[in-house]
Image (cartoon, rainbow, N blue to C red; front, top):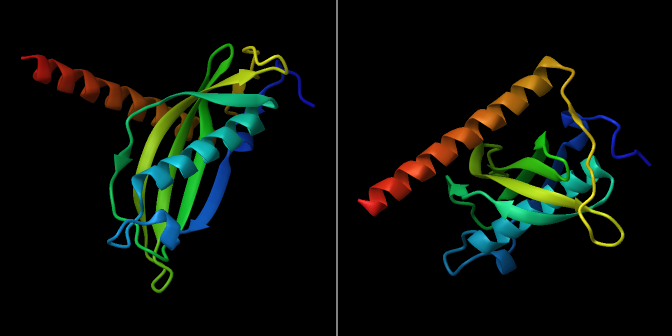
Amino acid sequence: MVTAHADVTLLESYTEMTQILMPNDTNNMGRALGGSILHWMDICGAVTGRRFAHNQVVTASMDHVDFTGAIDLGDIVRIEGYVFDTGETSLDIRVDVVTEVPETGARRDTASSFFTFVAIDEDEQPTAVPNLACPTSEERSLRQYALDERASRRRELVEKVQVADD
C-alpha cells in the first residue's frame, strides 16, 4: 500500500468506465436520464479518487454539469476521470462523458463536470492524500486544461449570479 505522502501521477489516477445505455436508464423518449449519467459520473469519480488516495473517498461536491448532447438507447457511454488537483485531504477530479453510436462509430462529448472527493480513514475521518505528480507534458497539459476549465466555469457562475441579482 502506498503511503499518503508518496507521489501519484495524474495518469495513475485515470479511470475509464464503459456502459451501454439500457432501457432502465432512459426516459420515455429513449434518451438517457440525467440522474443515471450523474450516478455513473459519481462512481467514476469515486473509483478515480480511491485509485489515487489508496483509501475510501466520499463525494464532497460536484460542480455544475454541462450536458452537451443526447445519449440514445443502445449508445455506448464512456465515462473518464482523472485527478487534476489535490488539497491536504481532498481530490479534485475531472469527469467527462463521451458517447459512441455503435452502428457508425461516431463519438461525441456529451457531459462533463468537476468533483471534489475527500479521502477518509478507517474511522471515517479525513486523511491525507498523496501529492499529485505530473512528470510528462501530457499530464501537465491535462492538469492545466482542467484547472483553466474549472476557473472559467466558476467565472461564468459568478457572472450568472450577478446578472440574476440585478
